[in-house]
Amino acid sequence: MKVSQRISQIPMSGIRKMFDLAGPGSINLGLGEPDLDPPELAIAGMNAAALRGMNKYGPTAGIPELREAVAERFSRYGKITASNVMITPSGSSALLEIAQTFVDPGDEVLVPSPGFVIYGPHAQLCGGKSVEYRLTDGDFQPDIDDIQSKITPKTKMVVVTTPSNPTGGVLSEESKKALLDISEDKDVIILSDEVYDSFVYEGKHVSFMDRLDRAVVANGFSKMMAVTGWRMGFLCADESVMPDLIKMQYHVCASPNMPAQYGILDALPAIDPYLDKAKSIYKRRRDLITSRINSIPGMSLSPPKGAFYAFPSYDADVPSAELAGDLAKNGLICTPGSAFGKYGEGHLRFSYAASEEKISKGMDILSEVMGRLR
Ligand SMILES: Cc1ncc(COP(=O)(O)O)c(C=O)c1O
Image (cartoon, rainbow, N blue to C red; front, side, top):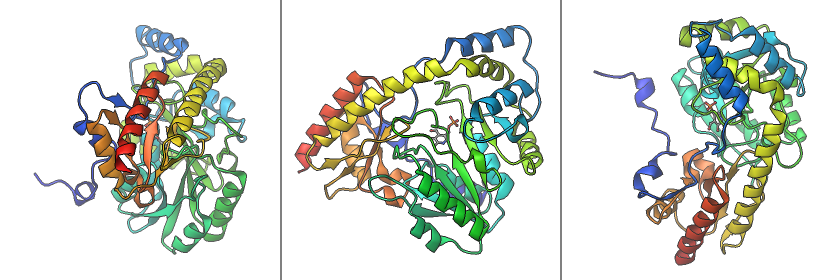
């Protein structure tokens, strides 16, 4: 059987490759998955919903109560109502549905580099083309000059991630303004991926939810509530495009998971104490990994401001895939910077959604392997 050119031209994500090289008992700092428990209210709410018979198809855009609850919580970033919100079966699906709704064959989509691995493939699955734009060194802001130079009449969308996977960078107000100026001048849509908005350790989250005239925002509950296996996300968009997004979702999945929506609904209004605790745990781990990395000769890292990733640069003449492979063979799984695009080379990504003990052991291995390299 011959599969489509669209799918055969897309390589498998580089994130999982390192797992094949690592032996049993390796320290895994390769996966962007919280190791915390989900809020108890969420689990109880999901179980109760299943037990009381909420096991049928639901409304395509999600249950109205959850759309309301999302609008209420996220109005902290901009005035949104339930009609700006669609619940989706994961943040990933939200991103694909947005691409499928806006990108035509031949369109170009500007994606951050280093950046999360699915934006480019999504553009290609729509028959479009992805073009990498670079992030600035150190604070990982979108390089506005690079974006300007890569915009063509075919550019349809510019993707931005804040806080960022893989860099941990948090968008500044100035960068947001510059992106909105480009969006207005060139008539391009901003796709803002904000799935880590709950995890900002310095400063504040800068959202595009107050500019749904120019932006569509993807978000989700995987990271927020440590429920990566539930596949629950949402998107926010202007009311004028919502019927098309809902039509797209109907053809993708008819409706999102019903019991899981009730679980999220029960936990969301009271989520702040849970998030405060999660944030203080991640911040401690961030401080630990930052000081350990900066004590290794030849490695350098500005403290990441958000998400749960460290993306240090290293000073050695070896490609990141080779270095990550060497680390995996020595018992530490991480991700080569090159897996996140051409401007990710010269870096490694470590997830610090892992215990302090694992982080310390992992940094011992990193220090030993780097010591041998130099
Ligand atoms: C930046 C970013 N966006 C979206 C996602 C997708 O998350 P999910 O599909 O679990 O909601 C991830 C997952 O790692 C991510 O890092």
